[in-house]
Image: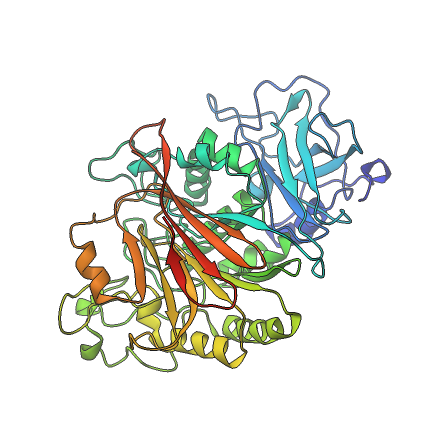
Amino acid sequence: MKNSNQSTSASLATHSRRDVLKWSVAAAAPMAYSLPQAQVAVKHNPFSLGVASGSPNHQSVVLWTRLMPEMASGNSQFANTDVSVTWEVADDEGFKVNRRTGQVVALAALAHSVHLELDQLQSDRWYFYRFQIGDAQSTVGRTRTLPHPEAMVQKLRVAYASCQRWEHGYFSAYDHMCQENLDLVLFLGDYIYEYAGAANAVRLPSGGWVNSLSDYRDRYALHKSEKGLQAMHAQCPWLVTWDDHEVSNDYAGLVKGQSGNISLDFAAQRARAYQAFYEHMPIRVSALTRSIDGLARGAEMRIYGQVPYGKLANLYLLDDRQYRDRQVCNKGGGYGSGWVDPDQCEDWLDPKRTLLGAQQEQWLNQSFANAHKDGRVWNVVAQQTIFGRRDYKLGEGLSLWNDGWDGYSAARQRMTQSMQSSALKNPVLIGGDVHENWVGHILADAYKDNSAKIGVEFCGAGITARSAGNSKLAARLAENPHFIFADSERKGYGVVEFTAKHIQTELRVVDDVRQPVTKIETLAKFAVEAGVPQVQRVS
């Protein structure tokens, strides 16, 4: 790993937005710049949002923090100035074993966020890290590199989570997740919600509806003020994707959804939301494919990708929002989502419609083909929503939700065909979005209950976001026999442990999200044997 004692100096005092990507790349490097630090005491704690790590591979990881102004006054000693932040990494929590240190730049143009990309690390190792500015020091974070892609690995333990709506409760699930001894967290979307409030709210977010860049920044800061969430970010690296509420409810690509925050220029709003997402997530600067200005022109922010975990698993992280076609057959041609009878929707099976976009589909197909060659035991697809058909009409006929994979049936069929044609080993799909736990099978044809099982699916309930309750759940399970379990009441997260022979999944739920302190229990436990696309409930 590079040592910052060799670092050079440069002035970032003035630069245009067109230069932000160039400076961001430089700022992410451990030794690129060293700006003068004030030698006076910092008057407040600038690390109030904590620390995080993410985007790991076998030799690199991203370390994140964001310097915050003094909340009481809204001012800061570094309000509009790029700031040099000291980082430390060591093998031990006391920072005495193999300690390394350096400087990284927090850019004012990116809300003084830090995205330190450390490379040349040893594979399959845990590290401790922290940041400092003046005499203020961050909390200590723990992160890890992944095993070498060719390494034989005994175990991988991950949690999956999504849908943390402030108004609906406290994020106490993370207090318990901190005790799970995880290697990774998969966050599958709806990190923030853009709403101004909710009926029967447990608590109300500050700032009203989210629209401007400062609105999005403030909403992320509000969510990250939860100590349990901060603690979980400091426990292990996260792989993150987004869903709709990081921008606006039910949006599709550059087409607006249905929410009270939608501006007249939705493309510009989406760009602001994407910038704020980057500023607050431990992701690589390469995600900004055409800088910040490019986002305003509709350029992509590349967050999908693949990470190998030794010879045990391939982890695929998808993006089903940025490139999708608009939802079809809403009543009155309205925007957003709705429940649709596909027999009354001419466009439902249109083979040209896409959820992932042509380029991401092509990448995923090629990745599946390559996976057959690399011989890893599990192929884990982490994405936003529920994959299998979910019919909510009891009896004859269908009523399907057009915002999820059901509403993009041809795209789903292309994906299952790709799994089969590539002979993909042990597919496991993990999703969120629907605020309910669903566990079941991936079918070769989602519309045929007797179709071959080609993989398994786990869809999570969300951290707090409300759902409809279980009054009709038994009947809905009967309508959808490819699912073996569902629950529409309890909130929490899932934990999946992978070995070469099997996986075990536990649905972990808290007793009452309306309370800041909760108890945790296992709602249900499931097992899948390698080579057998069959999920079984074991408790």
